Length: 115
Image (tube, rainbow, N blue to C red; front, top):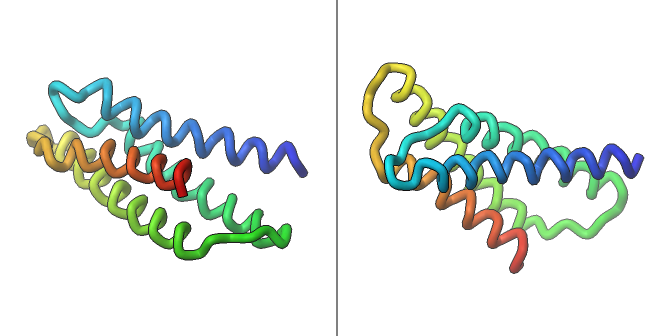
């Protein structure tokens, strides 16, 4: 079962890479890329599964930290969905919306590492 846990962590990190990497790649001309949208969904699904895995194996879960990270991730996901809908309609994506996707994802990484 360790391989399943490792795969969840692997995909969780890939989701982060898609979010932050897409943000950095389009920093001068901000937009929301499809991979950022996918990365946000990957982060949500794998994050929930990782917390469930930890709970199932009697791990110590910091519910406050997980709750804050979940709220930030939902904001990232909503911004990514709105951004992708604007791109699909050939509407401009505001700089604030595009930077919210990557910036909030980066804040979530900082919370994961430093808290």
